[in-house]
Amino acid sequence: MTVICKHPIVKIVAREEDAEFVECQKCGEVFDSAEYSDIAIEEKSALAEIPSDD
Image 1 (cartoon, helix red, strand yellow):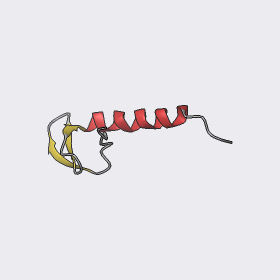
Image 2 (tube, helix red, strand yellow; image 1 turned 90 degrees about the vertical axis):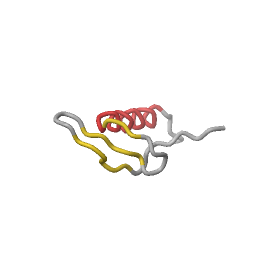
Image 3 (spheres, one colour; image 1 turned 30 degrees about the vertical axis):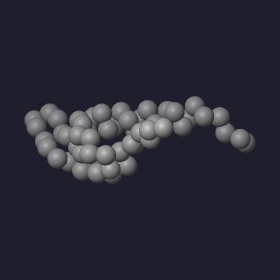
Image 4 (cartoon, helix red, strand yellow; image 1 turned 120 degrees about the vertical axis):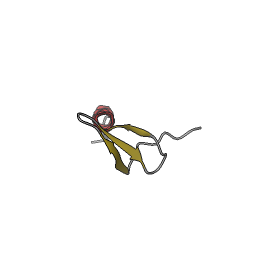
């Protein structure tokens, strides 16, 4: 089974007028920093949907 990298550590590799690109230090994927924000939001939403054992 393949484990999907959640991009725990990223660094900025390029900036343009209205975009900033980051590279994941774990898997090497390069993507728009706005996408990185979306990943974090989606992850928080998924965690919120998991019922707790309270």
